Length: 269
Image (cartoon, rainbow, N blue to C red; front, side):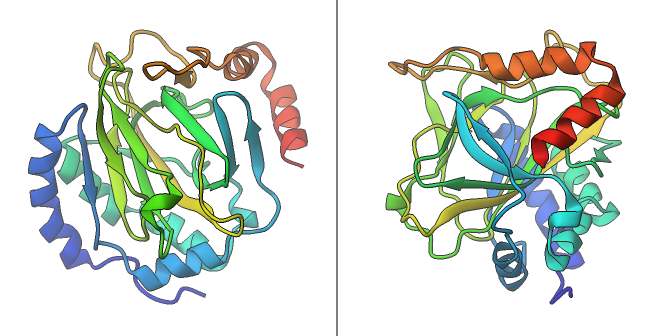
């Protein structure tokens, strides 16, 4: 059962103007980082509902993480929060902050939903897939809401934002409870959690990941349709691109949809 309001509508309106100014001038790409908008009691309830099983597992040289897109496997508070973040009030807030009109939420939670990284896990610096497989819309915004109570600096798990030349980490974000990051998604928004997590074995880095789309996008933001593309930090020895992800991306465009759906269901079972 829903235990409270995720956010105040008055707070949404008050914060939008200030955050909009920050968003316009942020570097290395448009983003805002803020605390205090969401009810922490509600977010704690979401964290407590994280299931033990049912996760999609990613384990490559570019990412070791868990994800859950299936709402039927989420708890009631989590589903309520997901619906709030996909709802009209929050979408209007995002449009006011970013200046992007006509934002469309993703009821399928493709690539989003709940994310979890356990000790030793990571997500290398990357740019995101740019098209929704089912809706064929353009991915424009990421919203990350962190769920980590009493999270210490020494645990790591910082979200890093990098410049396009991969020479400078311009921002490092500790994923503490209630912290939210909104950022533009295109070929220049390089981000990730590239260092292995050092939290205690009984803890994990937990977050809600929501993606928003438009029908079309400004020219120059994306050179060509692509899946997730990984990049090396200075001195880092990993492939520039995740070959497994590219193979999956290619398969989705070559394999008949009915067969692809069956493969996806088998993968998640």
